[in-house]
Length: 413
Ligand code: GCO
Ligand code: MN
Ligand code: MN
Image (cartoon, rainbow, N blue to C red):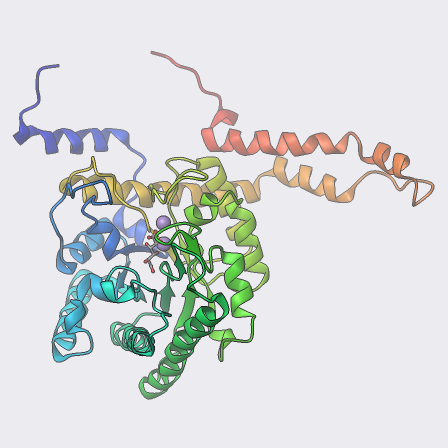
């Protein structure tokens, strides 16, 4: 193939995207409670070892593109859209009014707001630092985010306490730090009750998000389970208002089964919000688009969530790769992430309705005939021996459904 002139490269990408097929219309995409984060769309490809590969992007452009693609909800950190020095000022009010306008113009709603408590130098010793002034500032920040959330019509507030930990041991007393962190969450909940009351709106759902590594070396609340224990610890004044925003990759990163982590959150009644993406075990937070690495695991996750009536939100917390251009972010990254999610969600419905999976599952639950002696381990084993092969059969059936193997597939050239 001859070199492709720069002026023809976007057209080539678009043509191959079309040729991929299998995409949904914006109207169909809007039927799912899928949200697009400002920070994901505006991610410039930078990291510790990486210079940015894409230009900066404001909320107007992001909201416009999300609306066009058919992503009906938008999420943001406070400082993604409001400069730190403008927080809580008249300038904030102007920016928030501009966001409301952009949302209305593009038929997009704000579902979630989150406070950046990890980037600015003020958080060097975490939002629950020893210095009372830092902790008061953290309270201001989370309360201000609650205000912004109500102003934008959000229903969820997320907290990722990424800097709650340390690099070097000994200086930080963990119980103090956790108590101080709880103080900030309590302030946010109290502010929420006040503002929701004034506005006649329901209070927000406050969601903790765990990540096992990064950016601290040691993290005080590294997993969703640690956060469940924290919520139930007695430190929170409104534990009923606080739940989880698990992130698929964050559970995978520490070696867990994300589906099992989600199951524990469901049992606790705390699965409020879900960050969807993909990646690898025991690696850094690569935030790859949903389903690109572990589609089978994703199918299984969605079978669990669908069968428990979880309706979303599903927040596309991924980072378009550095190799993807600005054009590609909205031409390829976002539409393909949404469409893979929708297909996997619909396939999960197919699994739940599948007669083979259902009969095999029912047979496993029915078990074999009762053994003559209820405490005869060998007899119980024999009575169920052949049925247990169904575990493997069910696993095979799920892969068949995932790759379409049950319909047969040959390479015809
Ligand atoms: C990450 C985190 C963040 C949080 C966000 C919301 O991977 O760095 O998941 O993207 O979701 O900060 O609080
Ligand atoms: Mn996340
Ligand atoms: Mn992540």
